[in-house]
Image (cartoon, rainbow, N blue to C red):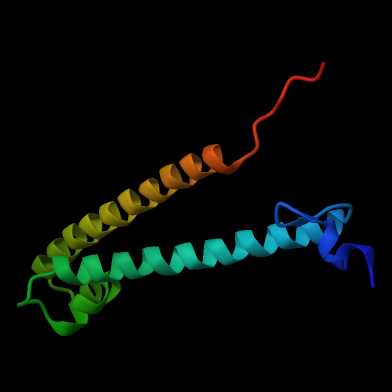
Length: 117
C-alpha cells in the first residue's frame, strides 16, 4: 500500500508527506467550491431579475435581460436594466456575505502559529 494511502498518515484532512496529493485535493476543493458558488449566485441573479420585472412584461423579457433588450421597446429595456441592476446587487451582497463567513470560518479553524523558541 502506498504510504500516502495509509489512514495513519492523514492529518487535518490532508496527506502528510505527499505534496502532490495535498495539491490535488486543494485544487479539487477550490474548483468544486467555485462551481457551486457560481451556480448559487447565478440562481439568485436569475430569480431576483425575474422577481424585479413587472408581471406585465412579456415572458421573453422576464427570462433574461438579453431577451428584454432585443425586443426593441425602450420602456421594457429601461425596466429590464433596473431589474438587472437590482438582481446583481442582491447577488453581490450574498457573495460578500459568503466571503465574510469564509474569512470568519478560516480564522476559527486555522491552527494558531506559535513563536519558535
